[in-house]
Length: 585
Image (cartoon, rainbow, N blue to C red; front, side, top):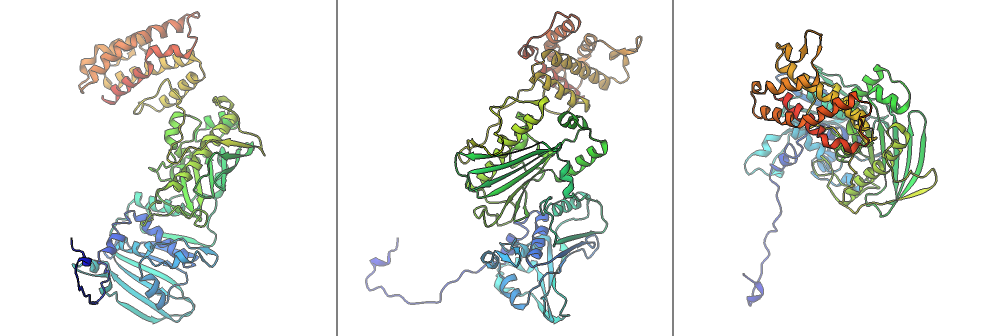
C-alpha cells in the first residue's frame, strides 16, 4: 500500500476541494420509498400546518376520482416569505425546528423535514402556494418530482419554477395542490383508516381547542364517529400512573361505581425513559359481564355504542407533546404485549377492550427519538424502559386492583396493594427482559372458531368453573359442549338425513351415545383428507368421557372431588378434534 511518508522530496499541490453532491433520486428515497404509509404522509402535512400556527386546516379529496385527480391541503397559518421558502422549506433536514423547541405557545411537532417530502410520496407533482402573514406578496412553486429521477440529475441542478404575485395583506397560510396521485383514496377502507387516524392525532381526553382539521371526500363513502371525552366516563375501570424521576410510580385507580384507590410504587432500578404518564380506560362490551363485575345493568344501546367506539379507537397509543406517534396502538401493533398476557391471565385487559394513552414529551424524553420516516421510534434502552413502565402499571396495579374489585373473579395474589400514602417496592427487570405473566391453565380452549357463537360463552363458563375448582359443574358443561358439537357436525354434513341426528318419533335430538355411534358409522362419507382419521381418533378417546358423564349425571353418589380428575378425560383434545371435523365438512 502506498505510504506518502516513504517518498522523499514529496511535494503537494492544492487542487479544487471536492464536495458531496446529492443525487436527485434522494427525494424519492426520502419521499414515497421511506414514507410508505400514505396516512403518515397526510398527518405530517397536518403537523407542518400546526407548526406554522394554523388554527384550521382543510384537506380536500373531492377531486381524487376525476381525470385531473388532486388532493389540496390548505391552512391559515403564518405562511412563508421568499427567504423562508429558500432557506427553510427548500433545505432538506433544516435544523431550524430542532434548535427552537417552541413556536410561540406551541411546541414544534415536525422536526426532520419529512412534511415537505410527504408531498412527493402522495403525488408525482405538487404546487405550493405561500401567503406570508402581513405581506402583500404571494409565492408559487411548482414541483415535478419526476425530474429528480432523470439519470445523473443532481438536486442542486434542478430548478423548481417559482412565481410571485400580489395578494391582500390579511390573507395568509399555505396551500399545497398534489396531482397525478400515487394512491387510491376512493374506497371505504382507505377513508375509514385516514379519518380514524386524524381523530386519533391528539389524545381523546385532550382535544386540541385551537386547531381544527376538516376533511372532504366526494363521494364520502364512510362516516367515522368522533369520540367525545365524555365517552371515557363509561369505562368500567380507569387507571392513571405517573413515572417521576425514573423510580417513583404514582397511581390512581377507580371504577365506574365510584370505588377508588391511590398509592405509590418504588422501582428497584431507575428507568431510563424519563418522566411519563400512562392512562388506561377499560370497558366491558357485554351487559352480562358488566353486571357481574359492577352489579349494575347496561342497556343494549350502551353496549352497542361501546363496541362500535372500541372497533375504531381501541388499543394503547403513544403521544409526544399531545401528537400521536404511529403505529403504536394500531390494530396489528400490540407493542405492550397485552393480548399474549391476557391469554395467560384473564385479569389482563385485551387491546380490543380498552383505550390507552402513553404521554411523553421532547423535553423530558429526549432519548426517545422518531425514525427518519416518522413511522415509529428508534428502539433503544430508553424506549424499552417506557414499555416496562406501562407493563408494570398493568401487571402490578391494574390486574391486582381489578381482581380485588371483582370478587366473583378473585385471583390468587401475592399481596394487596398498600392503601393511600404507603409506598410499595416493585421489582423491575433489567433492560430487554420481558415481564412474565403466569399462565392460567384452561380446561377448554381451541385453535380456530366454533360453529356458533354460544360456544364461546360456554367455554368461558367451563373455564371459570375449572379455575375455581368446581369440577362437576365443569364436567357437565363439557358434556353439553361435546354432545352439541357432534350434533352440529351431523346436521351440517347430512342435512337431508334427519334420522342421523334427530329422533323423529319422539321429536327430540338423539341421545349422546347414538350421536357418537352415527358419526363413527358415517366416517367414510367424509371426503376431505384426515377427517376420517379425526373421527376414528375421537371415537377411541371419547369412550371414557361418555361413560363417566352418563354415570355421574344419573348417580348422586358419583362425583368428582378435584379438578385434577378431569385431566384423564382429554376434554380439550376431544373438543379440538370436533372443531377440526366441522371445519373440514
